Image (cartoon, rainbow, N blue to C red; front, top):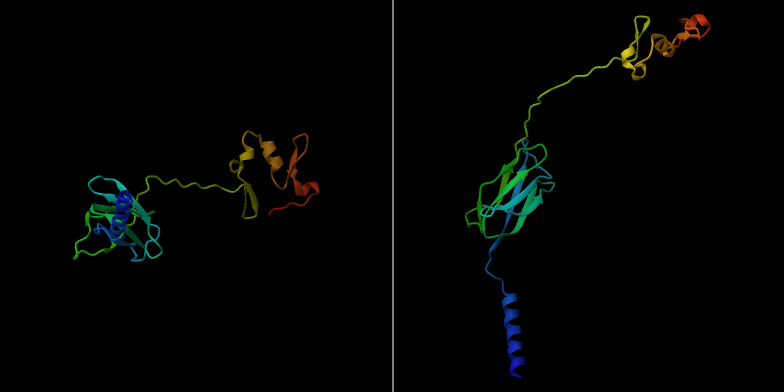
Length: 183
């Protein structure tokens, strides 16, 4: 009987301890991220790190308003890293949690655009296979991949408006009784 009474008292004390909140050692922190145009930066990755252990504690993405709210941050020194596509990565100063009453728990950070210089620029221009200039048709032989390794007669055979017979004789198709299509 005494054993049962001890168990009931222990359960009762355990219930009382669980129902009362422990000392508040956690807090919330809100970061609003804006871009260079003072508009909300959506989808920015914000990572919470422990300053002493350099360990990642939590990662959030900003919402459509550029806001990310970290809840239940453990006591201690922490900092945030901010990174987003097209922006320079940034690290915040170290904050000590729980925050002092005079410290703001909602901060706004502006991401700076990522500036990078191009090292090389290559401009490639290609002529069309056929050009119709001032009443004449120009065939750019190098423009067609299928012309690699062919003879002049084979190129002429593929050209519009030119007819080549089995003996290698060529003449304009208009003279051979066919209409020339110069489209």
